Length: 265
Image (cartoon, rainbow, N blue to C red; front, side, top):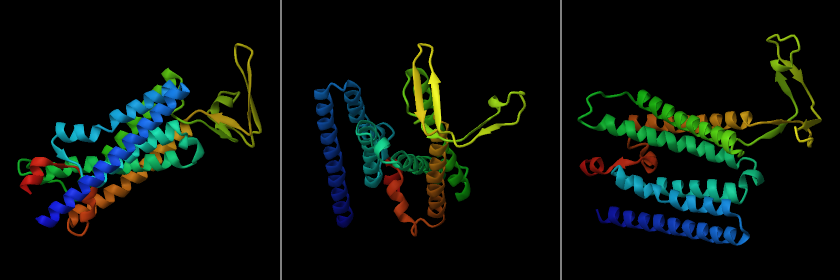
């Protein structure tokens, strides 16, 4: 018991230290952006500070214990997405930054979905006992649903607020039935596109070198694919964890646990 208590205190100190350091860095970033007059970035910093409170709010509101590892990853994920990704432009500087975050999101979302079902499955009042495969499948579906809903959000933000959350990219080949002059359902392919010229109604001409501007579909599908990978990885680990909880005990580092359930166990 003493060893367990010391371990919990050490983990709590680490958790608080990470939280305070990241919060301090966000405040520094907010001051810097305010001095530059970048009020959009200031708003993102303020949003980040609010998001940092979500683990604590969720823990108290839903009466769950968040493992230290999971809570720290959530803090780092928020910081990496909002401060590093958006304000410091890591999305543009590092080619796979967005891919990494979406993969992690798929993994963590599957962990949350897995926890919800596993808690019910282990509760005596819940009379239906689900197989490990079914619990893993539900966790996977939960993660993919979260991923799809996020892509809906990105599409809505781009469509109605003229943002570019679904990052566009240059491609040098397209295939579309819209280019078929006979209105047949046979796609016409254009290869090795060197340049695209866009004329707008106000007589402005925009030249896109080295190809054609894809408007987000590649980014959306890539995000869903890596979310799929993250969800699959955790669902497989969750399946193994239910089969042998002692052997795969490290999975508990990612699993929220109901406080009452933890006390009873």
